[in-house]
Image (cartoon, rainbow, N blue to C red; front, side):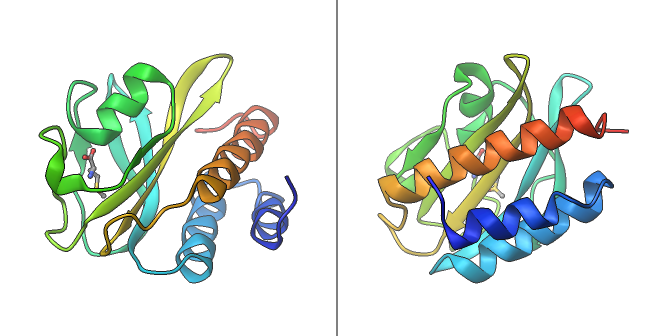
Amino acid sequence: MKTILLEQIKEYLKESDMVASLANISSCIMLNYKNLNWSGFYLVKNKELILGPFQGKPACTHISFEKGVCGKTYREKKAQRVDDVLAIQDHIACDADSRSELCVPILVNEECVAEIDLDSFLPNNFTEEQEKEMIQAAQYISEAWIKYHWPN
Ligand code: SME
């Protein structure tokens, strides 16, 4: 898959500092995808998920691997596309406006090291195409992760 957004993400990954690079990627996704109220990263640290660079309202800073869509993404190492967050019990509402969510793991040597998390204020906002695009973005981030020895 080759899209303008993926090409832009590849450009931002030329920056070797993790926070700088992920901050620009979160902004880039926020500007490219429609109807988002939150776009950002959670980073695996000390056996939990910690808030990383993002765009949107302030969000939960620590998420357990056992909780929420983000926790499920970590446990299953698989993208979660949730059409209606109100219909599932296991959703952490950082922002009461959120109605649908796309969460994609960033895998390095088959370990989940971080996640891309996107929220929309509309139900059913995320398409299968966008899920594939974010899985490809996660792959590019994984390659940068290894190349630059992130998270250092
Ligand atoms: N909704 C997520 C929590 C993170 S916020 O959406 C930014 C979850 O259920 O894990």
